[in-house]
View (cartoon, rainbow, N blue to C red):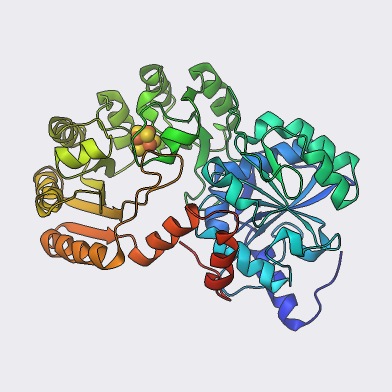
Length: 475
Ligand code: SF4
């Protein structure tokens, strides 16, 4: 192991290793020994990384295949970085695998490359630079643009091409040889080989992730996360999950039982992750099991038109807040967003949530939709007032529409900042009321996301060179 070079690096090393000490629990014992060593980098904080099932899943696949993996995260003002496992320097590794799930995390990737004096463009890097690989949620709709930065981009579900991918890494030594091999793996775009071809996305069947490690410092604390569904059949027009992540597939309830029975002696706190749990074909049986086994359950997302009494009963046992996403304040906007719900569904959801005992509600809305008028913004205010009749506290999250590639809004121009800020002011004034808390996504961050996700292979490099700061951004 290379030693830190100076006092500052010793301090940083201690900081990164300290993120896991005493707080982190692994699902299984992990054996680490292999000729092939990979730095698995999540370009955001430890708290977010540990709660990301994609990151957990790749770690699981690599370690089960006998690859030596060390995890790296990037914390604000803590550069250069050291692994959180053994405190190794990042530049000890010749393969850097990035798990990138949010557009703004690309700014952190660019910052990291700058810190290590690594050119952003693959064509400006040599055999002495590490091999930079990218996977993660962004690859489902930004695969081609990402080849402007990374040497290889794995587009889609990693499980599908993992075996061939890993065999290539294990069998080959030199960077160029590895890239030659990777260019044969389905779903991979590699610089200088097949980067100009459209990325191919594959969808794994019955391949689901679960927490490999949990920690009190994670975004969901020690909650064990289990992916019970991938993809979504609903196709809301603004949503990449509905349009780019393949057909909806769900974990069979018997498999859920099998997986939870392995961990139930260690934790009863479970987070079910899926695009929308309410579309699970065995939802009632699943909830019955979780209820009888007395799990403390949370879910990542539910359709408000698919709520059931039993689902909410199970959730209300341990949660005070009921979360739904009407998205639009009027039917016109909900239709433009392709949400497929009506005001009746929303009010019925309020009643149901209230009747099963939730005290508070969290509502998600989108504004800045093409054709949106004042009455549509007023519709958001009116729905929040309606919600307040049923719940003690209403938490509202309001986010500008970000037209994303791969969705029906691809090619639509995002509303400009000035207009968005005016609408934000209107909503803030209308929503100011006791018992209502409102969060607005930063307009400037939303515009950055829009520009990054719609960039091409050339423009993304310019954007990252101009906009990445010398500090790390945490969402
Ligand atoms: S239901 Fe949710 S996950 Fe599915 S397409 Fe609509 S917004 Fe996306």
